[in-house]
Image 1 (cartoon, rainbow, N blue to C red):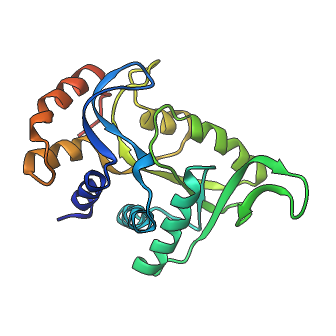
Image 2 (image 1 turned 90 degrees about the horizontal axis):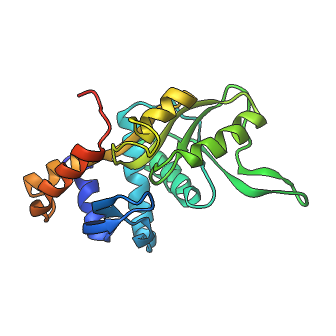
Length: 221
């Protein structure tokens, strides 16, 4: 299996990827759902970091520092940085932000590697729904130094239109912020895995295709 197929099976085995009928925060009724709250073990976070490392390596994303937005991105960036070194011999820095600036001790907004001018930073996140997290962290990073955000890596690109646009949050991130978003897999990859029997649930494919027909953003092939 490819690392993408292994990741999809990993999502299913962890109970993160679910099929059925789910009401999303957007109000849409979706035939599948991704619940990152199902990651509960050290072994799962270790494996998840390896998949992020695979994506970074495959796409040759220039990286000197992996940045994890607080709070969910923190363990992801840490795990991915360890995996990059262990699997590919790439030793990168890691950094994460605080929700509030610390005014005592060492102080500051960031923990770990402090941003520097020209530094190549890759943002590590779980999923991108509205792009809110990116819009919040970019001013922090760029306000600290003239950094070069070379990309953002997420687990799954749902490939669906934002509520206020015909484009997806991933497409908008590049158009509005100049940040290219890479995903370990897309919903198209998941559909293919269902059809090929990589994971169980082939009966859900028609509902997913119908959902994407209604809400899917247009992507070039």
